[in-house]
Image (cartoon, rainbow, N blue to C red; front, side, top):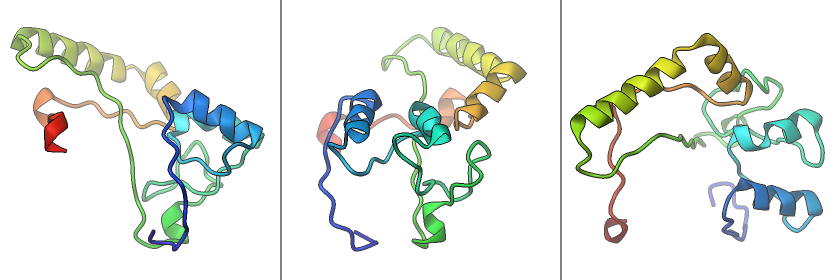
Amino acid sequence: MTAGVNMQHVPYRGAPLALADLMSGQVQVMFDNLPSSIEHIRTGRPARARGYRRRCRSSCCPGVPTIAEFLPGFETSAFAGLGAPAGAPRDIVDKLNKGVNTALDNAKLEARILDLGGVPMPMTPAGVRPLPRRGDR
């Protein structure tokens, strides 16, 4: 809307199905997270990255401009995390958090995440906001 482009949103049940339709020409554009499309971007087949959606360029794709470079003010991002049911015992939540943060502190894993276009984000349970309930959205 900001760019004055009229697009039809097509909901997919995951990136693989959307990428398949992009590759076959069923859709012309896709907004995706880098880890699921990075290898397609690196080869330039069947699609090319036109813009990175965060505020700074990604080290894994330094030649891809940010969308904000041609559409000032544009930024969006996503992150993946590990969750537990509400009311999960605190000791279990703390154990999961410690294990994930220990893994993210591993240089080899960190390098792989960065290579895939991700950004390791060690957090504490208090640093993550709960998702709104379905009726509150």
